[in-house]
Length: 338
Image 1: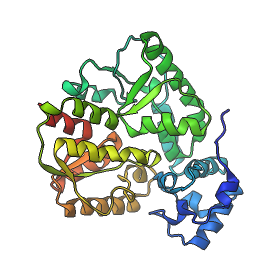
Image 2: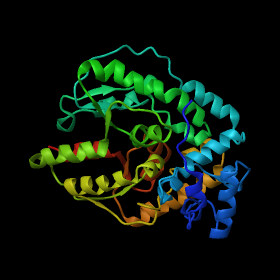
Image 3: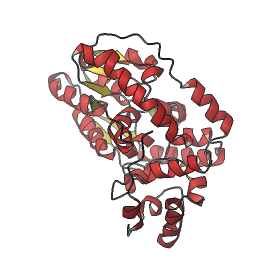
Image 4: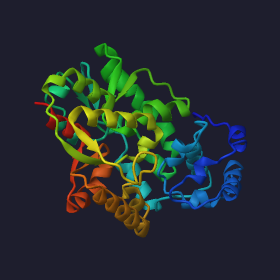
């Protein structure tokens, strides 16, 4: 069984406790945060463990890269604290389980990893994705979602199998050593979660936005500036890999889109609300979505840009009702290339 790489001494010596003080959902001052942090470190019940909305934000706020959110999930599971009702968790465990029935296949670079969303394969087309191969399905599902359900044990159990399948069924015998992760979830899983639990990844991962930025540069002569204003909905998993957010700005600059300034963006994004509803915290979900959508609408944007399918499902229709056209980043880029 893999173990979380976490230094409790580093956490106890932290002067700012930013992981808790900066949380957008918990109201904790520094003294209160220190008390709750010590309870978590000691493996004792804390209001943080029961009130956490699993937005992943504390992973981004930690100045030491010491994985405070993964520890929260660890403690929730150890103490039997379930963010979501048990029947919902059981249903998801079954629904997102792997059957190990996908046959091996030859691929060629670039290999686009769509995770558990093969229905998005139709968008892997046009000049941006010329000669690309697509891999998808539950057998190679990244499993990051179990952070929302206090189930680090599921990640430990399933993720090594997923990594082995990607390598052995698709990449190794095809002479390919990297994949393009279409979703933040997958990129964060392979580049952050796996190392945090001591799980080796034998291939290189490229974030979709890095890939798109490179393709847009290569196809610069075919790019038609969209001359539009947009808001971007940062998915929760992007809090694990905040350095990738710069590619949003680069992509928008290349396709002539303005990322309009708003309150709930960059370092202070709000959850799409989907997880809150899964946790049956409907009042909080309604409040978070309302504030987020009000903020988007006040920014005066034409597009609401997504990367996460769950965010699109949770907010897309509501954004459209507010006059913002919901669109995936990949599709927005395809619109800009002649």
